[in-house]
Length: 434
Image (cartoon, rainbow, N blue to C red; front, side, top):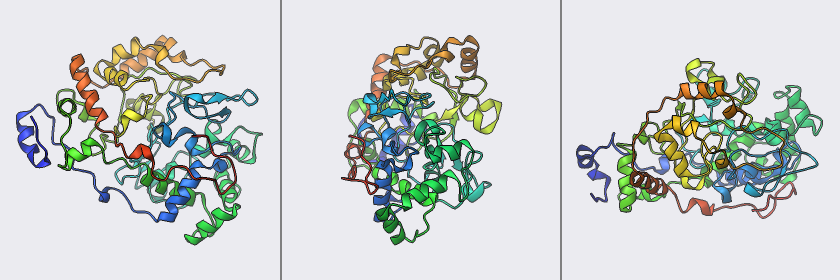
């Protein structure tokens, strides 16, 4: 069945197994507009290690454009590592205390207006009852308004000792965080803002944008502007199909029918960006340090944020745009391949109980136990009991068709990252090698 216009969708829906209509094409109206200089400021800050406690890690270290805006690892090494992606190694003179407990999420389309939930557990999200309309983790309440949940999210990784801040005794920012001094004039956020403002070029450029007294929320907003513009991915074959300007390849079209029908993928991966922004327990094999819920290696996801028992082991539905570029997959990167992640959805319990630990992409050199949760029978039972997705029976040929559709969500323009990295940083600090 071939067609080139979304005007034909009504007839298709009535004669197929589709669960519902396709989303409308994405347009410029789905994204905010930004001052060009703010975008460029955000670009420089994104690549600048100045925002880390020891000034040795940038946002780009774990979200590099050449690595699908992530880092190609199941669980990242932040402070105490050197290099990018699979080449990132442990610094023997300053070994990390732990891996980052969750996979570094991709950044594609996070600047779209509909994205109001951030992090795998949604601990930052739009909430009319919260200070300035955005709920933040305890002790990290916003001091000033920000334009989006993305801007608010951007100022949190810089407070994590294992991600960017460093450990107590290594730098004043880390010491402030350890003492729980985050807010106010003597807090970690203000220390970092003053550090940025002390760089003449940053100070001049922010002043030109009427931000003479620089605040950490201004930095978060600049980063959000860059991420929104640079990592917009809305020119995929699927987008062209929705706009009526091109057909999908036959295999991808068959996969689309499965995605929106028999396979029930769109039950959660709904909308223009293939996410309903909700949370589900899908029984992913747990690895790494977790988030210290009822054990030092468990991760109960959304349940740790809400305190609601039904939310335990639930994680946010990720967008699938450019998903073929963002391996490994899952909140902890448990699956190295996209097909492995797809097949887990077909029978989550089997995926959990027969997980091949070699599928995890982890940096060597850390003296940590990565699979304690999988060795804990009680924890495995808890993860299994929380599974709420329904098994789906698909043939290998149908899985291949879904894979073809997922590949049709790739925007070939975005990986070229039009702006790219700056030639040099205003701080004078070195760029991570690309």
